[in-house]
Image (cartoon, rainbow over all chains, first blue to last red; front, side, top):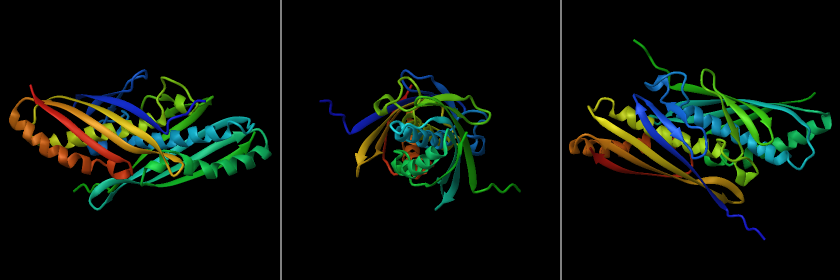
Length: 146
Length: 146
């Protein structure tokens, strides 16, 4: 019998490069340049902590969704999403006040569409990153059969 | 007079590829492959939502630190950090219970070391991503003069 632990750890490493830029690493994965965004005195066209935060939620919604459909005999034809995170000043400190994620999902039949609708209600609640943040989350979806 | 808005938005987009993998985009920035991690039925050696979440905090600590030192005449010789995020089961749902970030900073004089110590007390509180999450955060630092 294999008993899975109830804890997992994730590691990243960071080296400052110059100005407002750094190099982000996670062992075994491609390194990437990161920076402070232009609106906070940084650089354009480089991944920022704000982007990574929004991305972590958007990707976790997808991976949680994929986990839920794995035993459902769903013929998933496509899954796309768009995410927008809003940073607001609250008590004189900036924070992410809201995250809006819109999904565009295509499956092969209308029966599957109903199954997907039921799954999406669970996804937002079970996504481990939405569970870890204070920001208001909104997940909407267009579900098509193609 | 330029009045800066008190809100900023950040956007990412995601396309499912196959299995537990997707392609993550943010306009103007390099796209990257992302996936569910192996311990949740995914793939090794690909950035996961859990990695991106930990990275967003680690990078935000650095960018907030760089913002604080910009007017302080600090000769920053190096800044490196290591981050560990722990996912635990709470009320039968996984979430990030803690994030530990250790900084290794080198400046040119011992006077600057004292300034850095003062700044680090503010960084954790002002980092907009630590303000947005529920997880317990711990930031420690070795500060050297080289």
